[in-house]
Image: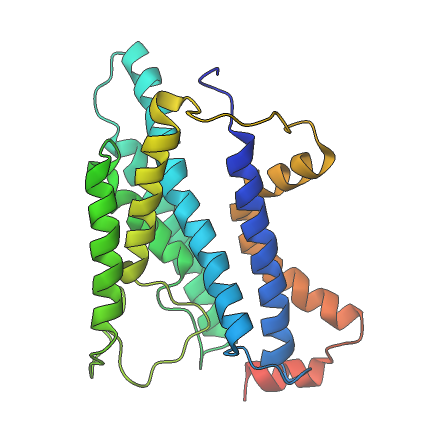
Length: 259
């Protein structure tokens, strides 16, 4: 495979995760704005939301190994040795987008605004995982440890918000999106481990029929390649669509945004 080629299956799974996210957020909006009475903590929806997040964040780890393998080859040809600045810039960019989401939600839903959501997490994870991008079994161990620590520390609520980013949160804490480093950093680590096993040196290490030209494959791949843009714009589009369809009236919307 050419170093500039993409692995279509990664884009397809990322596209699937984004579609699942949009479906869940549509249900969330219907419940949040009082259109329907939906129990978002029901077993099915809880599993659906966590599965969506797991797939997406797991693929962050897999994609990092692919990006690192490709960049290593390119940087060798250019006589460069360190890739840290590349991943530092990428992490800062995504974290900054997370801060914009924080500002937007603070303005519109101040009672539930996002403090440390998925973009904050991904931005920091990209930077923190840089030393481990070329590791294999260490990432398997770290993945298990980080996930276990994440479940462990949730048993100990605190009285301050300063360690929300880590996973320690007050007993009374409400937000519409929360992805602390623990346990989710462990999911990235598992993705790094899987990427090193299945795509070592930017080569697919297992047989897969070429479905890249399939209509559905191309559709999901397109969504996966544009996942960040879709994440940033999908909620305003969903709310506008609900309003235009007459499902959501402005009075109801303003009541929930500014109770």
